[in-house]
Image (tube, rainbow, N blue to C red; front, side, top):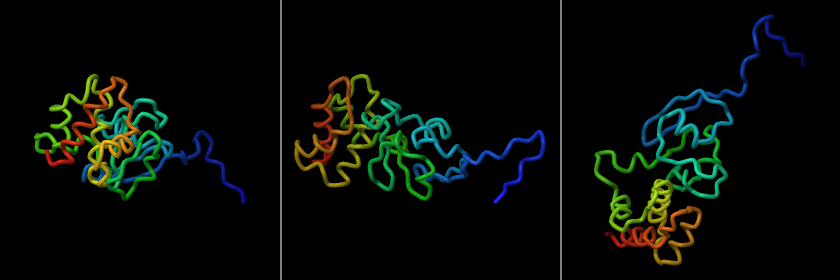
Length: 169
């Protein structure tokens, strides 16, 4: 099958562009983006939601963790176009009325951050961890938070904050 060349002086249409609608924090956003744009870059660069951080850009640090349909996703490895018609939740949604989410309060109470760079991803993972019922012991928390790296070493305080919220604190 032959394809017709574009008229002289015009370039062919960009087939890598896709029109998608991402539902983020309960709001639908229509985007025209390159099909190779990661979910992290769509959130940060196209929607201005900078809570999820670009750490390693290889899926190893967890700084970019968001929730998709309530499950943890390392957004630097996910293509945005794959998440149309799914509910994406970012750290920005945790305090819509200005009051901190219980996990955010616990992180502050337990001094569970130093530089703070990993904190949004840690918090999103912790919120999901509790919702999944996987915060029943120190070992479980350690195991299921292992995808989130804190270069400052605040792990004991992070685990304390999670235990506190899991216990209803």
